Amino acid sequence: MTQGPRSEAHTTRKPCGACELHPQGEMQNKALNYGRGEYELPSDTVDVEATRIELTQWLDGFLARPTCELPRPPQVALEVLALSKKPNARIEDIASVLEREPLLAGRVLKLANSALYGGGVACVTLKQALVRMGLAIVRDVVMEAAMQMTVIHAEGLNATLESIRRHSSAVAWISRFVARNTSIDAENAFLVGLLHDVGMSYALIALAEFARIHRKPARLDAASWLAVESVHERFSEHVLSSWGLPPSVSIVPGHHHTLMMGGRPHPQVAVLIVAEQLAADAKWNVRPVVEQGDDGIAFSPGAESSSRDETERALKVLDLTQRHYELVQKDTQRVLETLAGQFKTK
Image (cartoon, rainbow, N blue to C red; front, side):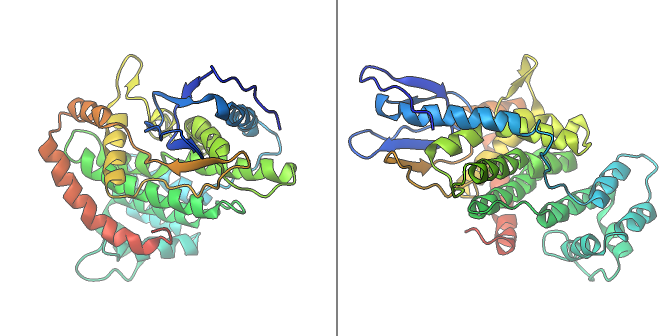
């Protein structure tokens, strides 16, 4: 593995990651701002930066490899998503598609009767569940169930993958709550929130493949997590586009840490920024399981959230006040209590 030069007078500045790097000794923790700004790597961590660069370059080429076969949601889920976009779509059409995938249909029925979506008399048939929820929410329920079913597995990294799934579900629900206070389509906000960090999961799969090729155990250390962070937005956009999802769903996850797009603030990104801050406040941020590296660099993960200033800017873009934020926070607490039972990560 390439080792970087060391110089007592040198400090490397790079785009920041969601962590704090601090070698054993005298270095003070650097509070970092996820996905934006800069972080500082003192002279005795340049080899970590060299490793990050090596891994990032390998990850950048991973999706273009002809042998790259990534897990996909069930085809039925993608068909339901396409159907939901048609103005003349009928409940009967969606039920007919779902019936081809009994396991997914069962998950949808279970979710429809859960505290998250249910209420009143229990639905006993798939059609009853679809009629109760309506087409827009059916699409969300199908994709939520599909993402839980999709086999995203990476030996040695599964605890971190579970944390990402947990975080993504939370951000999806919070995004819906935030969007309902604006003119933004709340169900599209849910879907974008659900899928916004899918690239992080796929980057971990790629990292496991890198470890397998080099005959090493797959693990996360400071350098590898920084590499995952640096590519995960690009991975998200690539993966979602490869699934045939519309730009309204695939583009925002590819830029969800940058409020400005095309020279102006993007409202859907603003929703995600606010939602991620609320998720971090509730401790539902991504918490990678990171080991201390061979070089003695310790690692303390930070929250995948924006700065408070960035959150304030996002609220202004959405024409929301601190009072709106607090009301959504109350809705967040209720739904996260219900979601908690679905995930192993605490």
